[in-house]
Amino acid sequence: MSRTVRWGVLATGGIAARFTADLLRLPDTEVVAVASRTEASAKAFADQFGIARAYGDWASLAADEDVDVVYVATPHSAHRAAAGLCLEAGKAVLCEKPFTLNTAEAEELVALARERGSFLMEAMWMYCNPVIRAVADLVRDGAIGEVRAVQADFGLQGPFAPDHRLRDPAQGGGALLDLGIYPVSFAQLLLGEPDRVQAEALLSPEGVDLHTGMLLGWDSGATALLSCSITAGTPVTASVTGTTGRIELPHGFFFADRFTLHRDGREPEEIVTEGWHDGLHYEAAEVMRCVRAGETESPMVPLDGTLAVMRTLDAVRDRIGVRYPGEATEDRAVPAMGAIRA
Image 1 (cartoon, rainbow, N blue to C red):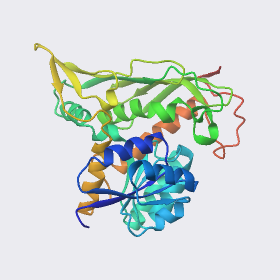
Image 2 (image 1 turned 90 degrees about the vertical axis):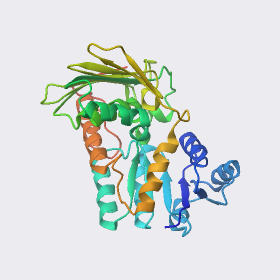
Image 3 (image 1 turned 45 degrees about the vertical axis):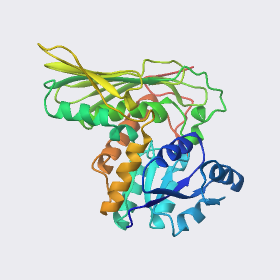
Image 4 (image 1 turned 120 degrees about the horizontal axis):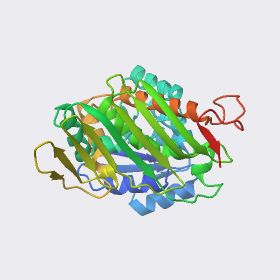
């Protein structure tokens, strides 16, 4: 492949705009096409970012021979279909998080990518952030001893109207998939897939989670206390505590530019990195590195890790009784153990 990587953007919402703005700041990058369900939306996005081609359907973007990589930024419920369409067309794909609605859909995408030998990565941009990488390296190297506890939260105060996508079961609404994926992914980056999952939640009248608390456990004795909310503004911080120290990440932990390392017998150390505020360019750079090298997976965001996180999210939803249309026939009006109705 030539040094310049040519991107297509599938969907035109807020996250697509943020990603594209960061992407265009990278060298040897070109956004050649954008697609939406309507041509008008695609054209407006193309005009905003100086993109040559605007499509009013996904298939045209997938078939565009000038596109090397497609960034999928549709609502969660469309990730399986959109990413699958692009993989079938032979494109490399960066698919927004959560990767899919559930593990079964995620397994289908991973199997398709591996069968085709195509690059596929979840857009878990947190994993590509230099601060998060540094924290993971310190933990792995034993800087704070054996990990005993992880804490992380992500909550928005709201309120969100009943017709908002965050409260729409058909779009994979709720706090867990949109926000809770960050605390869960942070914990699993450090500790791997948990051996036990407990959860409680407050459910909306529509049947999605408004506020969820999670307790994950590992056979090592480590635990993770995590929460997410679309009804309460939480600190959005994270920490990992070991037998000889701890690491604390400030507000906005998943895109932080600094953290504090506390070690027994030493003064606290603040480690600071330089970068752009959003930091979405880090994941874009990793995708381009992989594509240029002919790699089909990223070691920073491995597909097996994505599947492990999806299994945990499924387990949490099982505990709190959240089902999305087409997933199950159970009566969603009856919450599972660990859930109450708003």
